[in-house]
Length: 488
Ligand code: FRU
Image 1 (cartoon, helix red, strand yellow):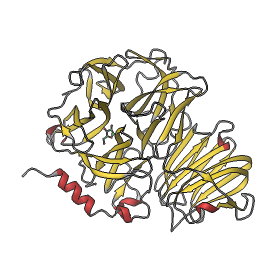
Image 2 (image 1 turned 90 degrees about the vertical axis):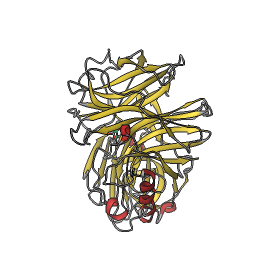
Image 3 (image 1 turned 30 degrees about the horizontal axis):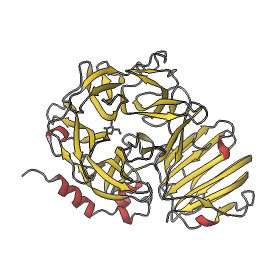
Image 4 (image 1 turned 45 degrees about the horizontal axis):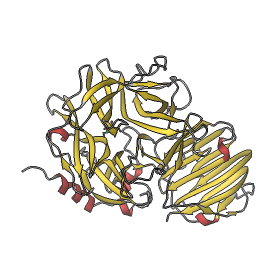
């Protein structure tokens, strides 16, 4: 009998211990059971935000579905039955990552079908589509729309982003590996979303060759147009995950990085990108982010929203696997923009709004200052301004807990007082003034640090020891404009 994939996912969910786990996040998307990786098919339709995700309900048995969550405020999430099941030849080894697009009355979810021959190990990567008119019933088109990669590329051909171009035609951007084992991005065009023509590789004519042999595979490329807050000019931003690059400079400490470059896509040329690139997040866990697609009903003033996977490569050995049978979550939604050519990411949580808060004590006191409103809380949002005479320690949880040290020009994150098994201790050099504006999201086992009004972000997992709660500020800084809100 054919395996009933939906029944087995629902059975795994029915016996899930995740919600009882004190580390399970309250306002970050996390798997109902098992493993989550990339955000997929992010789209806002009719005022509801949909977040699909790479989902392995029977982890460690590797059977990859598209899980489905939705939210009215990007803060409180409802979980639905998985939307794409690995139930056909094309996706037998995983319904891999992709994006959503609204087309008239329907939404199409574009994804990569991953098939691996059990005997030969040979991989078939195809680009596939499911359609829905109600975001509840999803019809898979079989066979795939694009049945194989073009000449010159290996079967590492995946993660379609599909959007409508200015002239009304559609484009698809994919991450690929060339036969010479270097990474690239490919562009396709279509007038009807079913017959696709390969336009060729995205090229970088002004980048001095930097991106010509940049790692062995590019995963999850995403193109987005952002307006620069300083100049008012619009630019294209390419966000992608080049596997196998380790530039000789600070950062790039994770197995795989995620970078952004700024320019202008004209045809297949990404012009004006000089060859400089920045990591989107300097933390221990960040990968495969995706921009939320808009629909006809979206407000033109709505921010451009990005969600990332708060995970990296294949490190699944986090404590939650043992305590709750789940692993990984998303970052919080981030409103993206540009400031003087640099990507800015601010937390965007309409359901968790900061309010003025009070400090008990002063950071200079021996016991430090605690945020009154967050006493006993394990899930919260906090923002403040700081001016530094020395260093300010921000400690989350009991004893040293997650120890964040802020000073002019530097952020240090020490994870050694937590149960998080990776990343020990990290130092990030900051631009002048960046440490002056601080926002921290802490949600049970994930912590996101935003500095300089979104110019620097650091995401980590922060499995605290004991019942660890609240936050303490100690040291040589004066802290003003404190605002906070708790989520528990
Ligand atoms: C990135 C990625 C994608 C792929 C998916 C598989 O984390 O490797 O390239 O589509 O995850 O789960």
